[in-house]
Image (cartoon, rainbow, N blue to C red; front, side, top):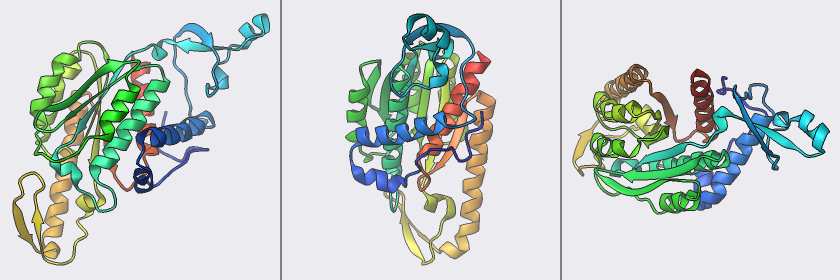
Length: 302
């Protein structure tokens, strides 16, 4: 299923506008409801393959899953459940290192927090157990996956701040032992680390049976380097300042960024990890479509 194009009925909202609402629960419900409505109207909306059981219809369910033969016998609406719909664990790993505070209109952290809230709410609607880990150079908060933890996850996301230096591979290796049960692990980060080190750290999580999705969050200025005037640029992690003449540095900078993204893409493919680059100026809906597309691909493979 390809979900990259326009989806009928979707509600694409500027993420900077969403961030100003200041209520992750409300934002998540709004975005996810828009996505679900769009998918219900989409000719690309697929279904899982192996029938498991029936359950009662609830508002918002896709009517194409209603078993009309059962309705004819019982005069009640029942929806077909499939093997891919069985409950599983879903955990967001959120990078809250100081570099995530960068952003002109919207910080990478605010975008990442909103994305994490939307994904969690979406998965909770699918009746999966949801959890969250925030980390910088070490684990900061850990909410284990549970069917009852949506509110705890949203509250933890709300109060997350990016203040301390970070380091990806250490916390990821430490967390691997917590993912013994098959599920989905979503890493949201600006990935300021060596690509090989990042995916080496994710390998034990994959080895233990979890599917891994990596959302690489970047501000447009980090991708384009649009600056014109000579300035001193500060490293948010170390505080070190470096004088730069943008005009003479731009081409080299963009080449370095592209090489980093290409390396991340290649390492992800080698390790069986789903990698997506996200520009914080783009609507969150696209990230949700990418995630749903990934989930359909992985459930068809099993």
